[in-house]
Amino acid sequence: MRVLLGIIGAVIVLGIFSSVLRTLVIPRPTPAGFTGFVQRSVSRPFRFLADRLHGIEAKDRVLAPVAPVSIVITLLGWLLSFMIGYGLLEASVSGLKVHEGIYEAGSSLFTLGFASSRRASLTAIDFCAAATGPIVVGLQIGYLPTLYNAYQRRETQVTLLQTRAGAPPWGPEILARYAQVGLLDDIGDLFRGWEQWCAVVSETHTTYPVLIHFRSPKADRNWLIALLAVLDAAALRAAFNPSQPQARTRLALRAGFVCLRDIADIRGIPYDVDPHPDDPVRLGYEDFLRGVARMRAYGYPMERTAEEAWPHFRGWRVNYETLAYRLARDIDAVPAPWSGPRRTALPVWSPLTPVDRRPMG
Image 1 (cartoon, rainbow, N blue to C red):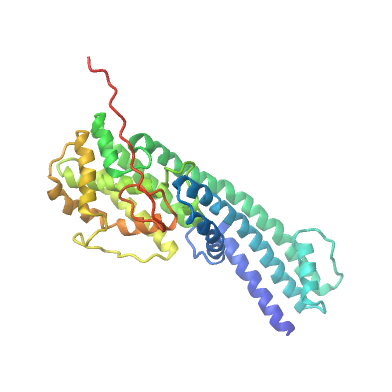
Image 2 (cartoon, one colour):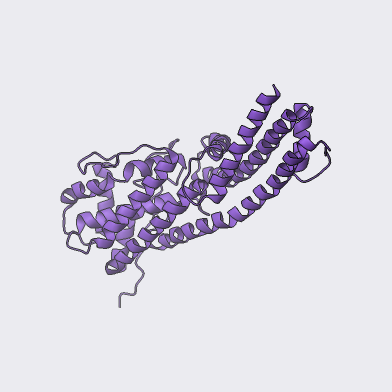
């Protein structure tokens, strides 16, 4: 029986050490394991409440604490698991009962020292437990600045996009606003910036998956919807203006759907690695025409008709639409146009194009 307790205790301690290393130390995507289980468990009651609210702002307020709370619960879960694992180890190598072993392990783990045994067989385990607590807490403290720095870098670009596309962002709105103020010659800079943004997000959101659930400061902004809007703008640009420079447009599209696929891999979401350009998309042709009408109303130049451009646009969108819709549903992103359904029915928020106030004289 004591041998079994020792084996179970060792498995728990080693397993949690592995979780700590994979989450806080190893700078590469790793399976979620314990942290993923905690995050899913924490999110369920928040989602349950959010699904029963009707306002988008109310849902956003309820879901905003999910990621921070999951970080705190993960730390507490690690410490509790270490206490149980070390307690079982101490019970296995001594005459202590299980609850007495856990009691002594907790005293050592939290460096309190109120329950100390002089048994030589327990000294090594007590020392290990005493070192584990400060190490885990110290790693977590060092982890938070890295996490929030990555969040800030992500949100800076999302906020900048608001001036270019409104809130929530929408692909046709980006092109309409650039046409309205005569900045279409500079739109390549937008795509270049978002190509770099995709590289950063692909790295940070796979290394630290909890970032996927960190919400923007305002309910009408969201990192995924911003990415989808830029990808749609790039696809529209490529579809309607084949004579314009395509390098930055295509690179932004490629970086965008690679980023979404990397995130899908870490979350275990299946997808077609080589979709055919003629595969169907969920965005309807009528919705596409409404977006084209917005662009045309503000003077966006088009070399192709909507009917001619539709197959080209669909051929680009098939690379990222399914994953964008799935992630938007999973994280309850703001329901912007062309962003798919959510778990509960919500009205679509459309950005308003500002009125041109330039003097006419």
